[in-house]
Image (tube, rainbow, N blue to C red; front, side):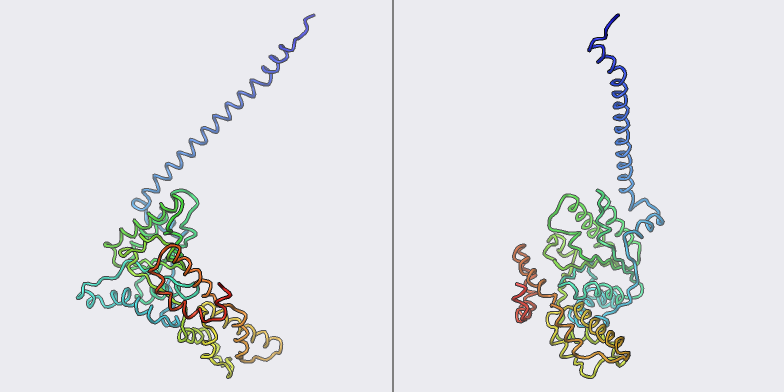
Length: 371
């Protein structure tokens, strides 16, 4: 009787189990390779389609894509709804509105509307509101297009550049259009990884492409930190005007209170002891958004009192004072950070514009606390 050796056992195991395992591994490897090649083919096909997107796609395809990345609306706000900022409004009228409404006069001087305007300043001071009002003030034929930066910055390589091109192609088809990019420093940073630079270059190429061909298209960018934007993007021909939107001064704060209390005054629910001039004095360093929050908090306090007592009573001065005391001026941290950033990036062209506000804010008791 023949006894199996250890070698025979190994050979028998290999034939029974090893060969099928190896065959399975080879089949699986081939399947993975085929799948990878298929994905690469799809990417190449998608890339080729992306290159043709802005030139050969039909209008319906363009509209379908645009719907996903653009908020298109007709603003109802006007300059009259914005308290203060008279100098900013007049500058915008000279640069944007009058060249469209007084074309013959501007033609005599060879003056044409600019291509781009960059608005900067503390958060909550009305940059977005100004952009919307600007589109409305230009006339009924001007469309307002506001791409969402979060949708423009896609996680897929190449998509962001494609979306930027699609936005500008869409705007070019409109007779007159204002494209508003909020927090535009995300699109045009001084530095960043390669994909961010590609998006920035795609944006600047689109801007350069419309400078001489599309007078009816205006690009408005808004940012809290213009020193973070690539200086090449801020040059004339791209953003012809860089406009500072300052925190509201006394008269502006007074106007903002009147705007936000307009309905309360009409309903005779503002107490006789409420002094709007005093409120404007108490809110030095407060932005328009801060003042709106103060008004809403005062209204809420009076409303709670009415609900508990069962009788509607006017809003009192103490309601406003309590709301102001609970809220720190939001301009202070921005002013401090602005000075530090200007020194860091040597962007001294911005220092003179905020110097007056810095001097005003330095007199506030909260100033040293922020430092």
